[in-house]
Length: 435
Image (cartoon, rainbow, N blue to C red; front, side, top):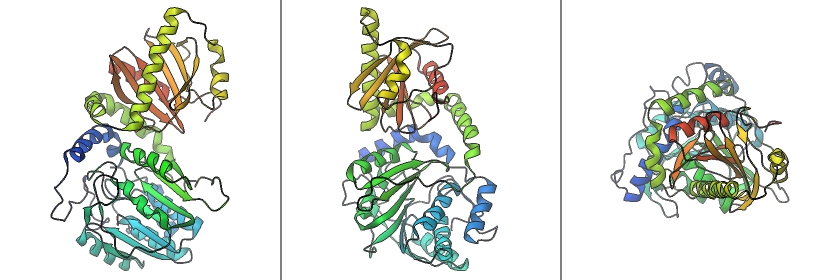
């Protein structure tokens, strides 16, 4: 089969003999991140709008039936547009792809339309590689597709990685859409073994970048590769992480602007996800939060809980603190932004505190239904995106989420579902002055 066949819910089964072998830690991570990440997995069932798909086919010169089935484990139109954007911008001479399929065909056709280039694509399914090679050739594209079974990984990333052979010495664009997260939520982190081969100005595209596992990967890549810049972008069902190898003397790069048409549906998909979150038992993922050793989740949760405790103690002791009206000034001075609070919430004494995450803002609030909560704001990467994720600490419920570079947590000694509703209200608001 190929990506033009009917979309299945799950990825193709591995065709190597040791496919079922996994450590207890790997299995635990699958359970934990599957519980946390199921909203992103639901997003992935949608392959993009018909308008976005039609525009994509026009950009690369493909017929209307060339990509009949997208979504689920296959690339969506958002990622495919990103690939075309990258090819048009940097005109790569060599592209390496990890995880073949519709992206192989689209990249091959984009290269053809933008000066040519060599595409080397690896995938762990031998039959899929052969079928995709025939498909690409039938559509007039050129690609070097290779079977790369999953084997024991020599890197310090968990899970099994591709047995890559004859990798080009210099690469201009790396597309990462495999292996599947079910191998391990962090498995795609091992793609960094290719980053030394990136040319100056070269680019990395990581699909599914909004999923909790890939957010862990992105944080670690930022730490490991100071000569690269990584930015997460929307416009696809699960987001794309764009990494750039900086040229000498370069300190930053402009963001790639999406060329797809999926953004107008973002609000409605988000509303649907929040409804599912409450209606289908989102609270069951508390087990996963306790099981997962994710460092950045622990950082934001622990710091938020400590700030909440300190805030309650200051209130009880009537310690002098900044005037609540100074919240905006304090946030701006610390390089932070606060979400807009509902008008019927009462704001207490705002405090600017140093933390392991840098400057952090603590805002005690009382909601319209009388809940006494603390809003915590800092710059951080977490396994969440703009949908709140729940944690618990010593009897307190903590919901945390991200908006751009900022992480927020709402904490209180109230029921988890009640707290999540308040957090969802904040995460849908825009801060004064925009982002």
